[in-house]
Length: 119
Image (cartoon, rainbow, N blue to C red; front, side, top):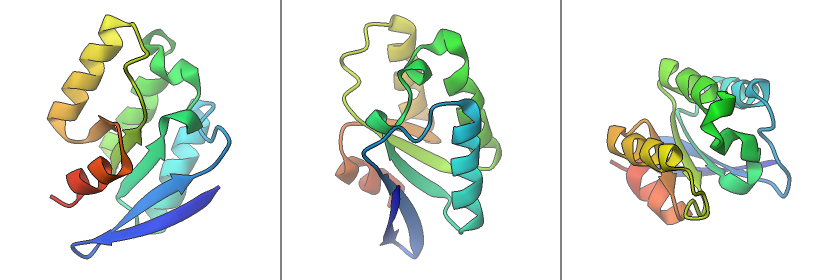
């Protein structure tokens, strides 16, 4: 895993780069949050391919648990990927609402994530 730092408006944004799944469990998500938070990052970009598919099945509760921690610590998260492949109406609604709230974004590109975090 590599952490690429982007600096916008005096704010450091961590982009997580890896060829492997980084978040397989709730604990993995919390470890990532904790490690980056203590390194001074309060905005994180992670790619969909680095997150277990179970995260996107809302019935598992993984997404809810992880995203609640991000919210508690006020760390903003952008998940970048192609979410059109998911058929679940509840997931689509969840993505729509998350994008409106501004704490967690589901976006299609890194540039979109950086743009959202620059505001």
